[in-house]
Amino acid sequence: MNPRQLKTFLAAIRHENLTRAAAEVNLAQSSLSDQIQALEEELGVELLFRSRQGVAPTPAGAALKAYAEEILALNDEAKAAVRVAAGRAETSIALGTLETIAAEKLAPWLSLFGRQNPDLGLKLKIGGSGELRAQLQHGLIDVAFTFDRGQQDERFATRHISSEPLVLIAGRGSQAPAFESLAALSTAPFVATETGCVYRYLFDTAFAEAGVTAPLIVTEADSIATIIRLVASGAGYGLVPRLAVGPAAARSDVVELPWPGAPPTAALVMMWRRRRIQPEALTLLLQSASEHLSPVRPADARLRHAG
Image (cartoon, rainbow, N blue to C red; front, side, top):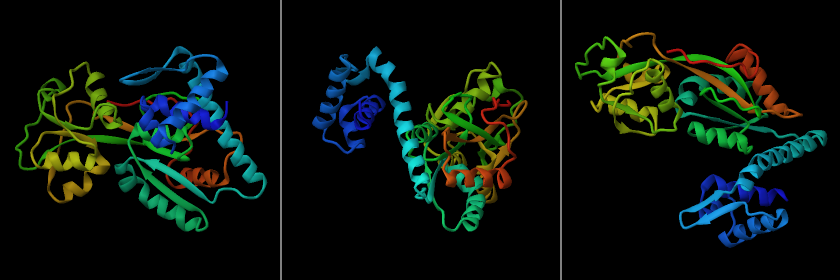
């Protein structure tokens, strides 16, 4: 087994499609198929079920998946350790985060960090929560900032940054009523992100923890900024992080309504991959975050959502 074969194997599982997997790893589909077939011949087992609908891991493929991820992570870590020992450590660091967090929470701190470390390059990548987790896992980013979903993964260290309140918003001209209970609120139309997004998870959790059926989603949007604009236009209500509402409220587009009961909050966390030897750039970033962005807390502390 070599890293190239394992990368193509994992790409095939991730996309459930050989054509899309080949595009990710910059190979012709025939070359990707050859690599996976060679891996299967070496191991003496079939790793993927193949059908017209795509591919899926066999039980043997599912068993290999976890090891393949660990092998590739260790491979990347070994390369980084060799570069450090040779005095050729990375001079840049890649961060991944949600768009709202980047604009409203991280920008001042990243500006300060850049001034304090002018020789260190910063790369900021915006993506969804699932995408960020995958990028962190595959070494495409060094740190991810996202809202916690209570998922425990021993491969990652986690630090709590802040507890961000979520707020109920409506269009300012909608003459929205004050809802006396979550049951009453559950009858209102809402605009929300798609299922699988961390914001949608927080929305569904706010009602599930109260034992109330979640409201009807009349429109799905892929960003909080778009949701706020749709709410301002009268498309429905929204449950969004307060840190994203400020600019819209200043324009008198939306109004914040009282939440019936204890207002829900979201735990903002930073995550990074555990390594035997931590890159100097990451060490500097973590130290800066502990001094200027959040108090230091025990890594992997179990976080809980209010609300």
